[in-house]
Length: 331
Image (cartoon, rainbow, N blue to C red; front, side, top):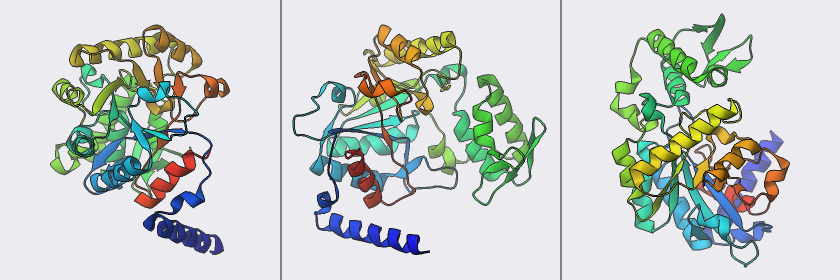
């Protein structure tokens, strides 16, 4: 109880300092580059499916602050900028390739003249219109009865997730460990179990719909949007065979380059999953700008081709997200 009160008072104090433009008294920066990782943008900070979608209004408020406080640069450019020139640089990235990035993020980027990079998969070439994790999250929300899978029973929690008590694991992380084709078999089973098609509801489209080839081209044609690869099937590249990982990367690079008619030189590793071997392969085919989420290997901290990122989510206010960003400069 005492800790909650203290945390609340700290948040209120931070909010006051931000409101009067004195928040920098809270921070002692030790680094000069921070890369932000977003996923989806919607109109309402909807959080009943998952926490991957931030509202357009909050996104715009964050960009307005970033533009005034920092130097916002392209995600590929930040790799080559000096570490000690007295400036603080921010780059903005989006993972997964949602249509909502085009609908809601791109207009804000263009209005404020702020660059960002959209990292997009080639999963539509597998005749898949939805990423497996989004499908599991959305279907789980609509599941009213326990779901049986592989001899395990997953029951709905108060947070709208399916969870197996005996495994002490949610359905989403359980499916994450399955092979690609098996993931989509489970989705089909869960869809039959739900006895509904939430993907036909227009209100849900912002939370799963992926960009088409035409929409990828539209993104790349913007002066403020660059396109990078997020692999082919959105598999965790550290968890699959190395030859399969190489195929995923090479295929997605070629796929995107044929659409945008520009070289693809950067990758955001799905789920932040990669190996040193995967990173070296990316470099060998011209993808020399690589983004993790958090560094997975100690030596990556000294590797100029790999940078970590800070994920931003609607589990906190805009002020608290700005606090996260400023704190990231102090690590």
